[in-house]
Image 1: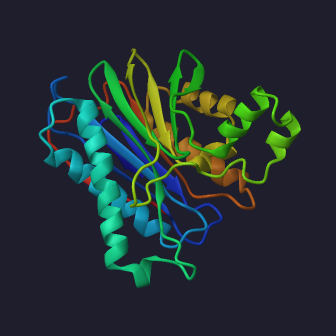
Image 2: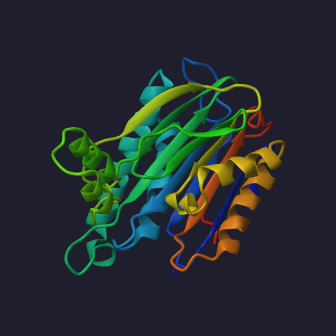
Length: 274
């Protein structure tokens, strides 16, 4: 657990042998033309089945945070995209310099998903690549903010065009395969957005390991603990561990409440919680 004024990060190893999730924050990122943000939150999930996923996620989180801090681009959007490009380039350079250590027997390279949110007093900017989740709890309801880069969406489009059946789409073996990730060789697709923050909004930035819990259960946890980010983060991870799913993936959740990012001192931190 790591916590600030009212943001918190919690994680579980699940049933996996190592933790491939990584998260990081800067609670006083540099100002942009939109004003002075109060928090930059980043979460990455090393790709399962690929080598060195734990190293990839840590490299990318570190590089994203440093990249955001080093650019003088004027807007928050430009800074976040620059940070993504810097993180991707840094991963690629690291893989090329350490290919024997970081690549698999068949030459496969490590990679990771990435989500990031930059919080201002009344709004936030977000960036997403892969299948990690940005969820918003508002007024008793949980809503996913970012689209997921998985093959399921392409299959659903084929269903819409009557090219395959609903059953074929739902049972396709590659339905949950990633269609975009940070791989160090160019980012094919990412999504970006800006959202307003209302009073009592709660944001969850998480890896897909929290899919063990349904939206109703996550919303219930937020409702029961809506005044305390630490309690929300702890309750989500505790519930996942209580279920004790046989093949439970790593799960990390970064919880942010509106008004949680008005710290007096700056800090940048990268964490991997077991």
